[in-house]
Length: 255
Image 1 (cartoon, rainbow, N blue to C red):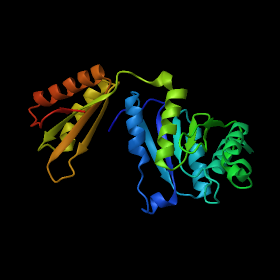
Image 2 (image 1 turned 180 degrees about the horizontal axis):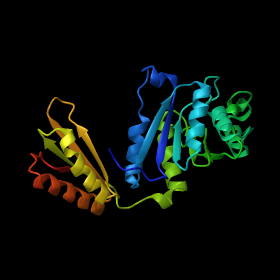
Image 3 (image 1 turned 120 degrees about the horizontal axis):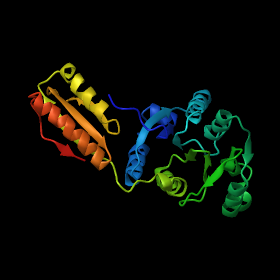
Image 4 (image 1 turned 135 degrees about the vertical axis):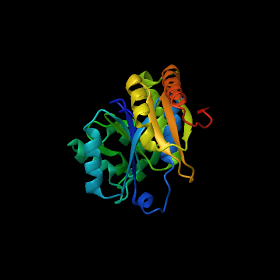
């Protein structure tokens, strides 16, 4: 259990049949988490979808209906199985157009070889803007707070960094979040619900979650996350409640 995330959260959409088939493993989520953490931000959710156009369109319709900042990885190339550009346009209810700035970048890079196929890589939803690609210059695009980058990590990750620093510098927080961890041993989860709820109610700005051990031990790990002062106060309250209840505790750690 945990408190509801801030309404302006950050999410990611990971696209590709190869991810769902197990042919490739996702590497983007840890990279995004690291980049957000460096800026005092957090990842709130992730979705993984295949290359099915109807499902991807429906997914983007749902994410575009909210206020979240969304990074979408993959499917923006020129081959027939790359459908993200078309699905983003359909989800937003706008047409596709050859973006003028994107067209100039491709023409400068490829010359006549930009046509007839490569040019489709800048056929974006109306209203899109360029995300620069520092590796091969083929850009990604932003549509509102949705940001579409390639599936290649060496290109995608610096593009995500650019978006965060260019469009969301006002959301960066110098004071990074911390997490306090402690285990309650040899105690059923049901016996801890009341204590956990009371601390959550008293410290709504902290995020408190519990996770039963998966290694066969009878232990429940509690995590208290938030800005340093907020997390420390909530953890002290939780730890104090556990001690007062006489519960057997493991070693407390911070990360």
